[in-house]
Image 1 (cartoon, rainbow, N blue to C red):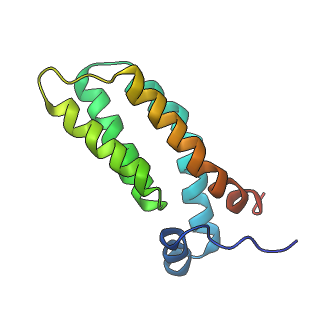
Image 2 (image 1 turned 135 degrees about the vertical axis):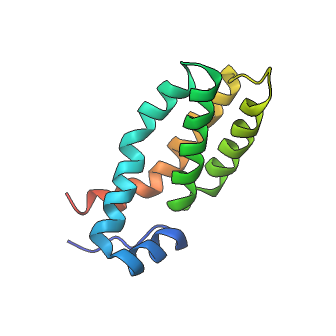
Image 3 (image 1 turned 180 degrees about the vertical axis):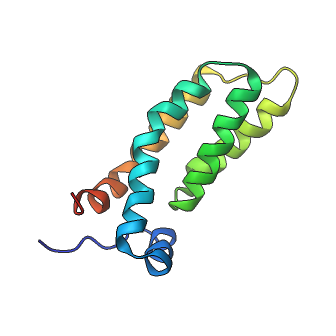
Amino acid sequence: MSSVPPPNSAIAELSEALGDDSARELVEMFLNNFKNVVTELNSGDREQRRRAAHSLKSSSHIVGASTLSSRMAALEAKLTEPTGEVSHEDLTGTIEEFERVSRSLRPYVRQAL
């Protein structure tokens, strides 16, 4: 089987620092946890939703998904406002961006399976 290289520079740095197996595990956790984070963004109180946005912002940054990370930073800031809410467009855009970025991450994770 040919080796799939890290799909971006952030994951390449993780791989260099932690090793390929650990880097793949982090990417796999990011991919597998997304559904739970979206559920949290869509339920609970504003503080729970803000924490979910913060968590996804951080994990997206770690795996090099900078557009998703920026989207979550904006949503996190929105949720710090007294009237800030997660809109349908926020959720839809988040899911679409995750799907876009996950297409480049999944092959990297799959080769370890």
